[in-house]
Length: 359
Ligand code: CA
Image (tube, rainbow, N blue to C red):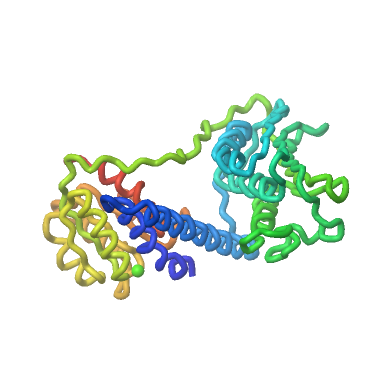
């Protein structure tokens, strides 16, 4: 399902990247391209939400837990939303008072909870309002994160339904989306053994969402400093990159836009549309082979294994897949792939990988 839902978005995203490189694009057209891209990205997020809520409902949410200091993670997530806060003319207050902020958690999933609560709070607060993000340790030493807004409070009778999937109550009014953010947040928090709830002092007095998580003992240091991905991406320079690239992909639109993009960066690109064709021409000399895994006549993993067993494998072997669970990434690694990108593939990331391939 994941694969089927994501596949049509890949060429559309690639096309917007291509369009942005067209010289002398009229400003109005440039704005339209940005609008198209933004909307595709929203669609990708909606699909991710739908898949997440399905996983949560079937108890299949996978967590990669480490000891993580919640404070830098919070600050990063809030800072990333600073432009939205500015546009909405909101004051964002951060009060990190917990002396024990380290939790044993999946940082990516925690970030998702923070993002959901924070964007929810911003969405329902009028210009001039304030969103306060706060941490404390409660009497038992647990960490309590609260996100309080000064916006319209939710209806008291809607309280219990706030965290139910597909409930309009959870969205309050004016939200476009599936209303899954709070349900997903609850699923993630509960998978961590924590609790999440909402409270409001009354109509017009704002809402506060709270998350409680167990902390790890104070003498344990976070395993790794959590660094957020940078928001300002610049396309790597195409200078000095003239590689022979083979793209194996059965979706013609995806293959064509990817080939066009890579050609734009100076590479010589050939395409194959199925496994058999891929295996036939994989024997030639390639610097890079990029292959879809879900091919009509077999798995791209076979192509990876085949290529790896040859005397002169390519310098880089990249898997492109609609599946991105840790087990999928591991399967690619075992088949000999150097990288595994989940569709819709982040073109910037792909170009970054290519630019690190030795010439
Ligand atoms: Ca495919």
